[in-house]
Image (cartoon, rainbow, N blue to C red; front, side):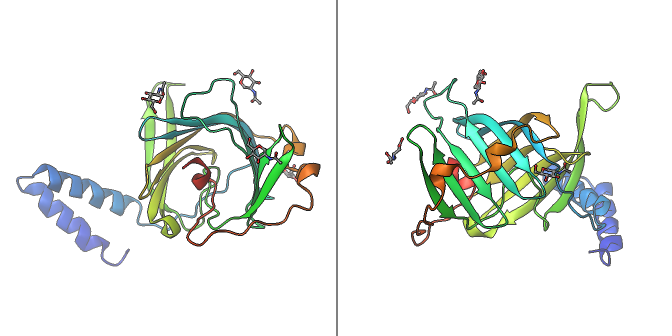
Length: 232
Ligand SMILES: *[C@@H]1O[C@H](CO)[C@@H](O)[C@H](O)[C@H]1NC(C)=O
Ligand SMILES: *[C@@H]1O[C@H](CO)[C@@H](O)[C@H](O)[C@H]1NC(C)=O
Ligand SMILES: *[C@@H]1O[C@H](CO)[C@@H](O)[C@H](O)[C@H]1NC(C)=O
Ligand SMILES: *[C@@H]1O[C@H](CO)[C@@H](O)[C@H](O)[C@H]1NC(C)=O
């Protein structure tokens, strides 16, 4: 990357001086982005968090709105959708994910049952994958008016398992704000809100007693289990 950058920059410059089409302008923009972010950047890892998460499909369907608890060291996540404001597309979900172990539980507290499944894809909207690439740094809102802007790093990467890619906006303190997932199915937008940097209720990250001894279910051929797939 670094090796051919001078020539790329030169090429960008020569394009710039010619009469430009919109496509060329876009390409120049991409060249400049490539120039700025050619350095190697390591993704940060999010801290412990409690907050709200909303999940929307790009068809405009509200898939879920609920509370999450995330343990960044233990790589554990609990998400429970709040059914007090249901829309006709919302899903009632209660998920307890163990990313290091590669398993998760779909919990039904009402009838005290649960399903234990294998994870085929560890990706989720609360942490940046290690192989993500820094695409750009953006000031949303205003950079000059205090309290009216939010500076975010945009990280991108691919999801080979479901033939897609993602784009995550993350604050300078490593709090993911929005994540977009694009795949062969409808794209999804995850948003994190009202985040606190602590685990308020550690019990939420403990497997409920009624799930103990649950066997791991067989994954049907061709099925991909992941946090994202739970909303599809
Ligand atoms: C995050 O939470 C876990 C589980 O409660 C705890 O063991 C760990 O020390 C916490 N990490 C930080 C940095 O507070
Ligand atoms: C669901 O939302 C309502 C109203 O916003 C709130 O009072 C309640 O605590 C929420 N419940 C859960 C489990 O998050
Ligand atoms: C509910 O679902 C129907 C059909 O699936 C759709 O036409 C309608 O717009 C939905 N309403 C809301 C409020 O989402
Ligand atoms: C619990 O409820 C879910 C749906 O709400 C149902 O699919 C499941 O079979 C129920 N399990 C038991 C043990 O009743």
